Image (cartoon, rainbow over all chains, first blue to last red; front, side, top):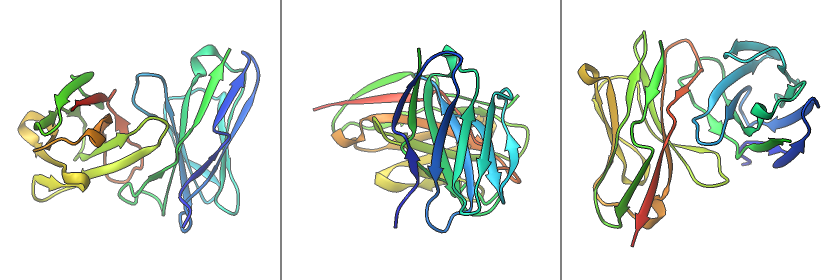
Length: 114
Length: 113
């Protein structure tokens, strides 16, 4: 039974560019949440997708957007990249909303902005 | 404001020694509390969680944590540390009707033989 799969594993982008990160949830899960983990920091909640809609959002600018597909996979898009967007981006899947945090985390995508 | 404080950035212990990692939280509603572990290049693995009931919770890998409401704390303990416990440990808080977790900045654990 596959866990959460994230791609790519590592990515280097230039300031001002756009990036798309992908996440396939654990089999049987239908909800995807995204977290940003800057170096030396704890993860910060970006947003959550359920039934192809954004359900909750953290304190992130509109440059951060997402999408969820009918097969429950999800994309995180970041526009106009800044150096400060360099971080590990973690995807977490779960079943349903407010389901007592039954998260399964992926290993993350390491984004470096130069 | 909702926040989690892990006052120890880095802790070093000898293998076989006991361990306590500190966590204090601030949360406006009834807190749900968690400890996660992260090894290099890996995602987060849940060690244990507290929602309600018995304030001493047991987790995986021999870890336990105690919820103390009066102190707004949820410290993680292990009686005898193994070299494989070396990792980054994160305390987190959440609540009912939300899936948003608020994490602390983490404590890096080093274990010497």
